[in-house]
Amino acid sequence: MPSFDVVSKTDLAEVDNALGNMVREMETRYDFKGAKCTIERAEAVLTLHADDDLKLRQMHELLKGHLTRRKVDAGVLDFKTVEKAAGQSVRQEIVVKEGIDRDLARKLVKDIKGSKLKVQVAIQGDELRVTGKKRDDLQAAIQTLKGLDIDQPLQYVNFRD
Image (tube, rainbow, N blue to C red; front, side, top):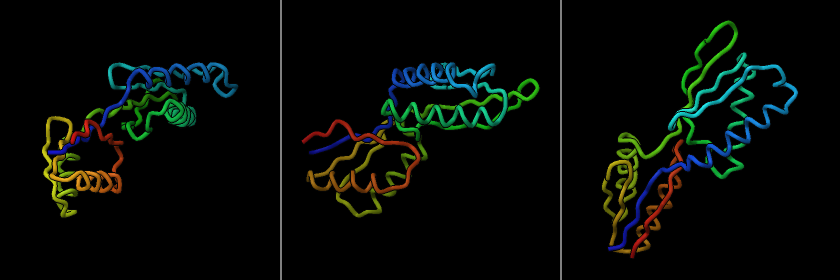
């Protein structure tokens, strides 16, 4: 039976490249001269340190722009709350989303089943496996998933006849 997998993966090497480009741009920009703004990555967590809220918002824009240039969807970023650090400086953690969590997987399964397509959907860890008798049904399932309003980018891989 034909099947495909729905996954949400992020290439962390491209994220590192985007962070390197962002740091180089921050070193050359006039509005960042003398500022103590840094960005660090530990596993799938980015930590931004900025002098104030304005610099933090500028760093957000730089980060999104550089990720987009590296063909990484900015929807993988999960911004946590801004924390006050010493004096005016602020700190924020950003989680790079990997995989499909349980709640999102249940929502996707519910939406596919609600579309009355003749496919079966199984949750397998942090991905979904969609199987059906006809290739057209699977392509319709992909179109249904693309039409949903989801923050996290999805990839459709392992399409088999």
